[in-house]
Image (cartoon, rainbow, N blue to C red; front, side):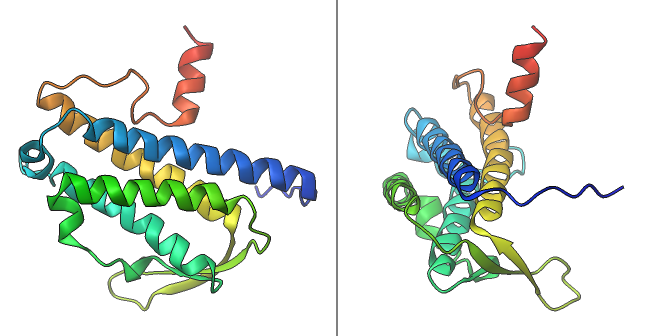
Length: 182
């Protein structure tokens, strides 16, 4: 069953936008937090045939880059990631890119154009799909996507003996559930 909801008012949209920006900032802070204690050798090493931590961090960075690059023109193409190996092989490059994302997020609150078209491949046997979206919806997707990668990164880091905060890489809904059911 599909539920229809009223279109949010401008005031609610502004609150939602600021909440989503804050959530993205928290995700980027967690990326930075995990990079603080680990040496570059751990950042670039593959563990148990999993992608290195650096590959996951690069992927997160490049997804945000696609978002910011596309926002100004109204079309975000998530297939146009650069796949820049320098981001996954250098802690300093990754941390600089995370700082740039933080700066871009801080400037996003003044955005007024929230209608976007998103292009992405969803099936390797078909052409990329283009769909209408909004700034808020894409920020929500970035939070979910980044949280997923943070959970994987957390497992990889913990397997190397590093400690992380108890809420690292957990979805906000999981944190709310745990808080309400303790």
